[in-house]
Length: 75
Image (tube, rainbow, N blue to C red; front, side, top):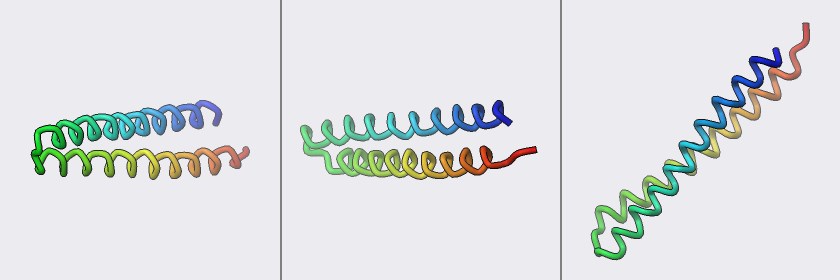
């Protein structure tokens, strides 16, 4: 069971990191859009930051719940 818990933890961590990178790249696109006064790029940057943060938060919470439930199982 320990191997499964570690595997789930690694998968969750990877997805959370991907979400945080999406926030970073969204912020980069947002600042470029603000500098060039391109509203489309600014909106895409904001959307990327929101989706990235939501992904990181939701997957982190669900993953923590899964790990907690798996750790309660005993044979």
